[in-house]
Length: 213
Image 1 (cartoon, rainbow, N blue to C red):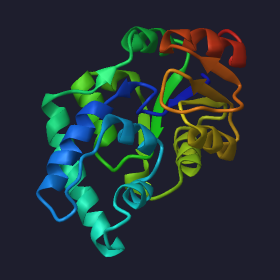
Image 2 (image 1 turned 90 degrees about the vertical axis):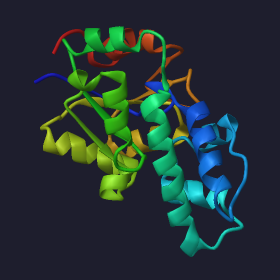
Image 3 (image 1 turned 30 degrees about the vertical axis):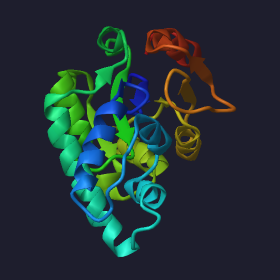
Image 4 (image 1 turned 60 degrees about the vertical axis):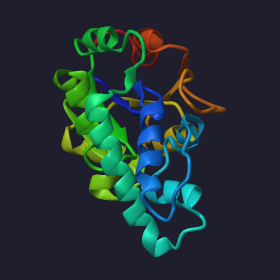
């Protein structure tokens, strides 16, 4: 059985912060919660659940209203990203092509349902990943979703690749090594391996698992 690599999405495989910030600003401009959302704001939100992001973005709005506003933002974001795609980190598809011969590949992130599907569709990367999970489908913490993906796919050995300390904590919760994508949006104190580019991932995975299955 092959070892598995489980990926975070934002800050690890692509950067959609600029596009999402514009879409959220447009969506909120049509509501009582109008405000400007920047790419830097989106960086702060990476790795958080939508409930946590709502607390950060809309602290002045009644909690009962926040979920509806975040749904408006998400709808606008998805429509925008269908046309104005996020940006893959350089070399991502070449790395995935190389990795899938030696590893099973998965995605687990904290997005709403539909985001991973949009990513795979617009980037044309669906063939590389066997399965994926996200907070919006299960309402489970990322560590639990990692374990869920491993269990339903019969994975016993895996590593998680992400860019934030929340990703590190999720890997720890799932009981698997963490590879820090230091080119992303977060700082991490400890990791089994650190990569400054996704192109460094094959070598990092080999150091963790050894060569071959």
